[in-house]
Length: 243
Picture 1 (tube, helix red, strand yellow):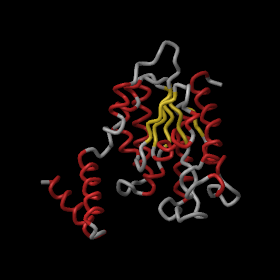
Picture 2 (tube, one colour):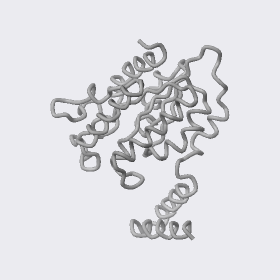
Picture 3 (cartoon, helix red, strand yellow):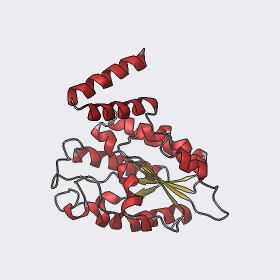
Picture 4 (cartoon, rainbow, N blue to C red):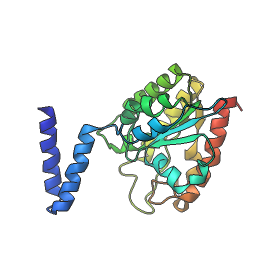
């Protein structure tokens, strides 16, 4: 009954948004897929099955995240080529979805380190209203799962946003980003995690994401990833070697 009710709800929403049959069918197909696989476990299932266990001495790193991580390997493939770096970002995802797929998309891959970059879509309410405490609880759970499986954790700050290109701050209020980052930094210090501070490196004098390093006020462009990459490498090295 719940599935039927949700289906009716999605169908009603789709009908209200378009009268184009092709667009309607595409919307229904998308909504059906979400209902059947809300955390998108199928996205990387095939890739995970093909991935060999880490070689002896391999310092495998999994990047867990949303669209910023998802697009990283596409916009800056050189960062991943020839390195034991595995991208497991999924566009639009929130921390509850990442928590569900943490076991197949991180733990099962046997990395030495996981780099978690999440939270912006939680603040935006992509999967429903989220308090900061709810987001923090999901981060805690991912960290506890990682530690239980001897995986070192790099906790990334939520990146800033800006309205220079298109409106972003209404859905992602800067004050909430700052508050969540303060918690991530404090939690990382208390639990001996590596804190990866993208935020400070990417803001301008208005405390907004620099216009020249973003596509839309939310996602980095190639220049944005060029800033992120050495910061990520340093954080990974610190997690692995303590320096």
